[in-house]
Image 1 (cartoon, rainbow, N blue to C red):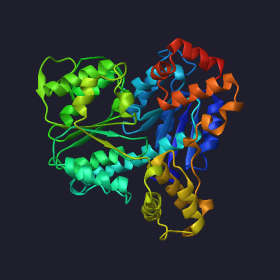
Image 2: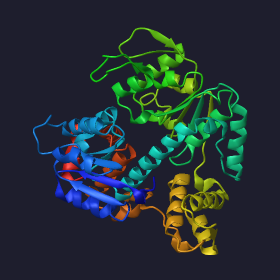
Image 3: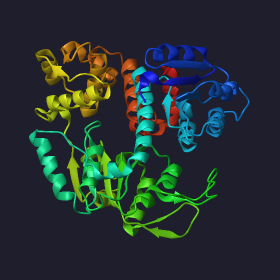
Image 4: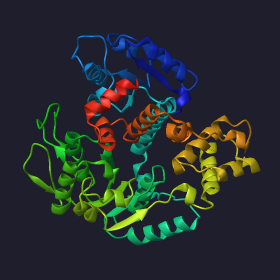
Length: 452
């Protein structure tokens, strides 16, 4: 579904939040509906054909104090099971927000959020809903197609050569590279060129899973294994049996999670939570991380025996700034894709656009280029893009990059560092505190001190 055709319902008892979201989204979506009282949620859903619900985690009510968001999320799931719900939370509610994913929320946003990020999340969820529908009706066709990788630089030619060599084997692969370089595309390409191509390809972002959710998601559970485990459920290892399991953000899992994963890989068996009966598995494992290998190979952070287990062969995706000549190639590819998607005529580039693209360092890599081109195609007044049509996202520019450190007061430097680390870990306070060398309590004190 196109973002412009979407109806968004925002439920929050803070009128300032309602106003801010309405102002932000009114030019982006078809309709924004605001609601202060969650008691009116059902009537709003009955009256309106809502595509996305933004639901606050806490209201001024006595219902499940501290868990109001979960309560109303469950209600929404009863009233409208296919609803896309984004939970809105403060830093202190992160654990509750992660629990909400288990309850069926599609995502959560941390206050205060970046406006561009909120719009991006809404758009991605709508696109995912459309693609899921398409996948159900055309799975046979999708299984027969092959992921197309674009790149003429020598670095990418070396990658393609390595992929063709390793794909037919069952070797475990570790894909390294910065965010946005296309690690997931390489993983899918390896699967599609393997002897398991007609079997499942299952992707899991393991870095976002809590301890309990990690086991349930990967290994499955039996009915009654924990609260709300209402039926037996297979884990991703079983779902991928015979095919390929892709574990993204592997560098962000805890040592305890690593131990459990290592046991499964060594024994080639999984045991569901609440059961003592192991199940044999046959999977090809591909992992990915944005951490450099030397940082990953740190005994305090990652088990070396697990690294050896997942890293029979490693593939390092180069950043876009080092892929000589590929920027224009990819820009033209995305221009063609989005011109077709938005029913625009064939797109060309003038000299100023080509120069601007080649001069930019693309900290967000291919992903940033893709979103830049989509925005340019949507907003362009004619079929020839100029430099003025190319607006690079401020999302990739951290506060530390925007202001010289020499001119920055110590307090501002500390605040900037805290913000950057929290964003790096997607709002996970525990991981952010660990990287900063602070306790969770100390980090919360600083968040309060700087009114973050």
